[in-house]
Length: 384
Ligand code: SF4
Image (cartoon, rainbow, N blue to C red; front, side, top):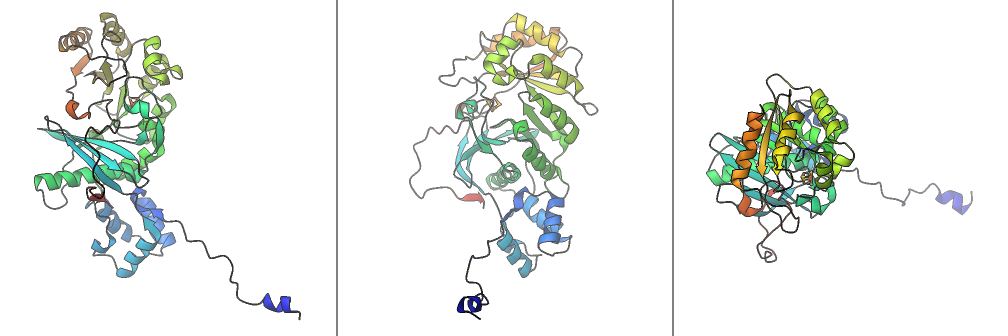
């Protein structure tokens, strides 16, 4: 036997075995988690419910606090899973009680969520993307462009983090979930990140998790027509359409998505949308002075909506410097509403929350008017 043949029997000193990729635990639905535990970790299926409750009812991510799990399982979870934490970067409070939270993501990006308390509900406006690709010309987020989609876990983590903030702020003990309503109207176009949105909704609605009712969740879209059909078939939550114009010429100028799917295509998709019993579609209509607030606009809006179980939310515009649009006076918003009501369309002027902290509709752009924090002064992590 030659020397080289001999050496081929020596134990290999070569390539290290690559580490298995870690699983993003927070993004798993309950069936996903069960599959992972059984197939990858060799655990019993019932463990999934225990872990899921720690994560999504108690909002805990520290395995050492999951006291009903064995030490061996906790160790396996530490080795094979991770989280995409959100860290509170900034909190701004409006005079009207609205609180805007800015979160830093695991990869150093920023997203925002807006908490809007009112006497009968506690609503969170949730983001689904870092930035947005839709480029609506009246919207500050649209100027950022799209950096990336949020994971299901990052969408859910906003809800858990704000629940925890409210508990701390209001001295609520235990694991009570203070938030009652969720609106997906923050940064990003939710249907442009549909798979992750759907998973996040499954987690948020699960009885073994936060258990939000579908009736208390609204998703708003600019009108990605093929996705509206899927959204109707694959989820049970409420639909809002961000319409904001009554002619294609107007809408294509302010909302580039209209060049691909025009108003007729959008309204056809809405008419086919499988509305559940007693529900209505909400049309969001940002009133832009001299652009879409004429009597003619009101008449066209009535014609577009005629026959649909729908309501219109009129949203007084929040001016963003440099975008070239202006707020309508209150009297004009009232007149516009009156015209819709006379035409048989249920219309409301939406209270504009958090204007003074740039937390209102179309203003989420990670704008921080404070001086930058000193090094090392970052606020504590809320989910890590
Ligand atoms: S209005 Fe919504 S869809 Fe349009 S750019 Fe802003 S965040 Fe994106």
